[in-house]
Length: 116
Figure 1 (spheres, rainbow, N blue to C red):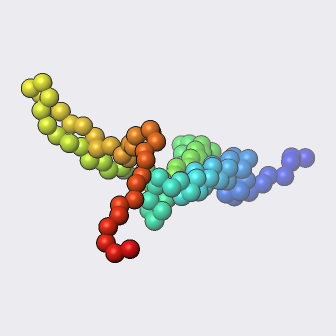
Figure 2 (cartoon, one colour):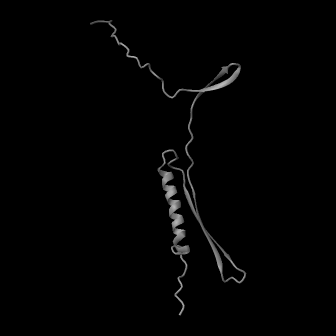
Figure 3 (tube, one colour):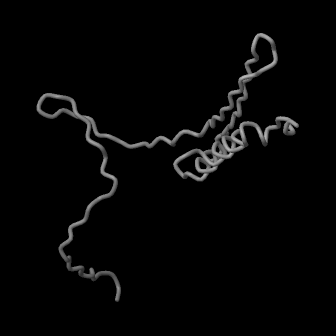
């Protein structure tokens, strides 16, 4: 007696590989949403693609399953540069991110003036 055959569904297709591929794509989307370097409101997209190619007799189908995730790209960054000439060539120097202060102790003296 032949074993009972199981009708193909999305959950059992390729021994559950279709669902696993979707879950992996979903994990990628969720990591991308959580990344502060991406646009929070950008639309992410998951595509689950199932291709079936039948043989000439239409009795057998070769099945290919794939998943793809369209993620938000990383945010760009901005900076300022100063443009000028140095040794006869145009150059650009990036604006410093933070001013540096001297590390030596400085004495601070109050200023007297006005009415006491």
